[in-house]
Image (cartoon, rainbow, N blue to C red; front, top):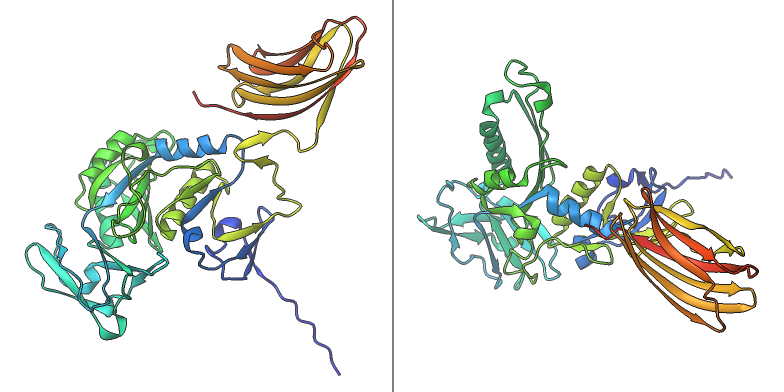
Length: 432
């Protein structure tokens, strides 16, 4: 009898290329980061949650990217209603600048009772009662939406949106006679590049521009990446003047989330919470934000939270709760008699906030305390809250600025007592 051995392999590839989500129970191995994920299927809210990886000052860093580098916008002519299980929709408002000629002129999304969206094929409905200001849909009998599901109708298709934006950029840069426009559409996210480098007679080489626009037709929202040195104000004005856009601004000045009134989400801006999660309204919004963050930082900074992460030997967590912890073990430093020396030193550009919990064995005496430090890079303020069994005041712990570094130093004025300082450190950068 011949024995045949079959090697079973699981899904693998770079982290950014793993499916979001993996199928329920499916294993996915990220070859670049050596992380392992298990697919949890369609976990309701997890499909629309973005998880930021733990790194130094992650919450503030990520929020700053979103607030300073994105122009967010709402599409015009997005209607929604709660289905009553009938074939015909209520009367919906028609966009004056949009010509309606076929069902394919729209994008229709149905959110099920778990608020998970799916695009409705154009063969499942026909538009009807098209008047000067309104229209509605009649669904075919085999595709009537479930009662209490939410129907979202976008008056614009992705190609119309991308064409509108490209035309606006061509007008904006007409002096360079934009020579080549490349459009790449993946799922419901539009990504395009305008390359005007070929026309060297009209434009210099450093005027090459690369622009990325992200669109989520399931909620009628999107955002545009202005780049690290981009001008959000001029791009806000450009987008706000498009027929396909009803409003555009920076994240802090425009709440694009919660814009579909029939869905149970409040109006709010994109906000990175303390647990390093970002709640979006739809899976595509989550994918778009993850793509933006990872492209911006050139790293796998974020993932959609629907894949369960298994920590491996190579991906063990070292940073928790948006706080950099130097080591998990207890640290110690010897304090010599009649001496002073540095205990720790950090670059003041990435650390200006420090909490040091410590205990001190000082000759035969003991104490416990917490050192709290805040600095602006030039001066330092601190509080050393210490409790003694017997007097240990000959040993002081003091933070100072030394050049570009924030240094924590001890000073032992005792001529004979030596000791050991046991401590843990938490530190981060409080933004200016």
